[in-house]
Image 1 (cartoon, rainbow, N blue to C red):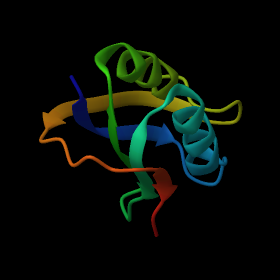
Image 2: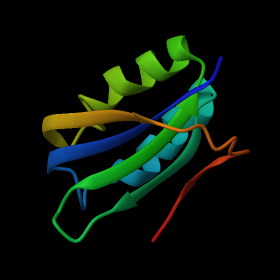
Image 3: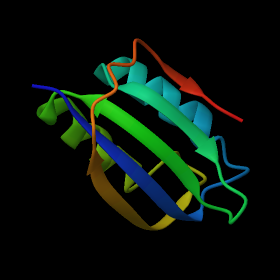
Length: 90
């Protein structure tokens, strides 16, 4: 059964290829949804997948790509949207 989370990532997460790395990891793990930079310096993600894949994806979000410094993440379950891909939004 699919689950969908909204994830807000805080720290040094913009200007470090966080969105591109997130898309790569999402596609590799079968996660659908999107990622975008927010005006407050955070990264916002909506991620949808089976719970096991979503769990692995959230663990990766807590670390991020090599040059990121994730301070914290917030997650909240939201309704499934049945996305067909994972993409970067602007």
